[in-house]
Image (cartoon, rainbow, N blue to C red; front, top):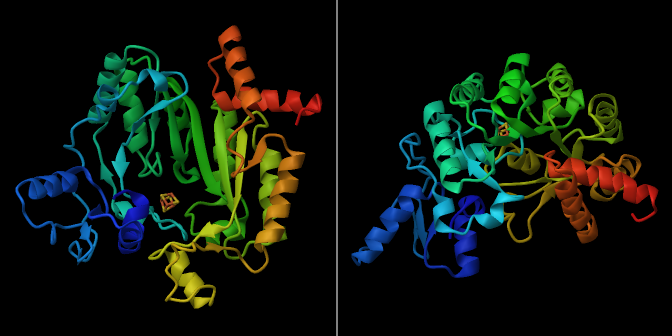
Length: 374
Ligand code: SF4
């Protein structure tokens, strides 16, 4: 066993599944150590981060410091990548760790609170090699928790991409409003970014504070304006229900969406914050009496809803807001109807569209709604 979920609940998942071994945290080096130990008939207990039914690694999560010298991913050599070239992406990480401390987030626990940066040269070489091997257009996606933190790193990566004149299509998760600038967006556009994800979670001044997002309303407004100015297709993510959320703060975020977000862009809305052990939200929820320190939080898992935005109300507000705005979707609604997906594929081929798929789907959604098909 391994992965993020396992890292948060190692003992619970090992006992639930009955698996022999599990690795908490990063697996690249630990998996090799585990396999080599098992191969020579050694004892896996005591290998840092390895859990067995009778041992718990070294009792704390060891973060591997040397992230820079890892070999490049060669996943396209190991599986038939043709299936992925049309709608899939090739994932790339530019760093691990996050020094911010958003209330609910488990990333700093999983990857550490210190940034471990890869050099722009190494990142771009990995992209270049993979692109040459695959030999046909493929989108490379930066899957860091936050692409543009710490300030300057994303800019340097873009400069290296531009310097090498790579003809690749790029997208990224996690553009944080804190460090956006004309310079960053200009470089991203020139480097070949075709789509970005923006994750403010809220656009209510009091809620972004209580979620400890580390940015201000001015940062969010500036980011939205830059996205329009540079015409970067964007998917926005909002997360409602945190401490201090109410109908008033919900409406503040909706007002922001109406005023600042391009209706050709997609907005995902979710309700409730999953409570993970070790996060500031966990402490907050225990102090508030929302959960007890004895709660295991895996089975059943627990979502936090503020007293003024309980589950039923929030669900109703989100559905109502999405019903009135066709570019807004509840985050549970990630799969379009199969007929719409087929129509989108046909349209894209016939018209040679290279816009992000979500933009084609949003246009069809409007047409289907007008024709009474939705
Ligand atoms: S939500 Fe993003 S920015 Fe905030 S702590 Fe998590 S990874 Fe960092």
